[in-house]
Image 1 (cartoon, rainbow, N blue to C red):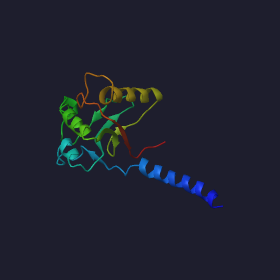
Image 2: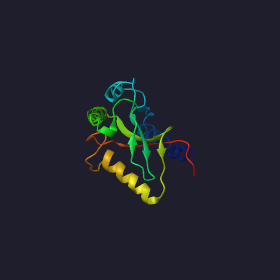
Image 3: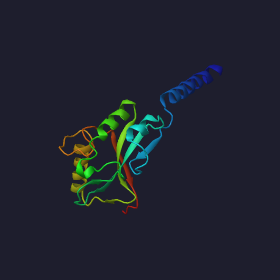
Image 4: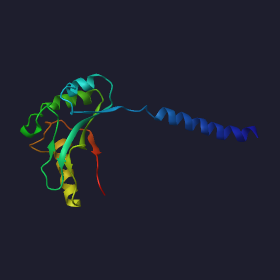
Length: 156
């Protein structure tokens, strides 16, 4: 009887050890870009408080609209004024911090009118912020780690 209990107990113990050693503690993320007084992106990352920084926001996209960013006074993406953020993005990434682009926000103009519209937005994101190529990358040549969706007030 004792032997029958030892095998399941040993397996359970191994499972618990695997779960605890294979999992990480929660990661704190922050939205950066909507307060002109919040300091630079590099300063935000240098605090060591965050594992993910979401650059906020791409406020206009889809439905045939020209995509637009709003970085609340940090820089003006519409005049290529944010290409210098590439250095800050790389500084964050060199510290092991993921840098993502956040889409939407509370005051944006965004929607996807069709599957083709969704593909067009996806291509824009890939070529301008992720691994693709474009001559008009709003944040310069840095490659972001992903996309965050902050879609508020949507309808079905």
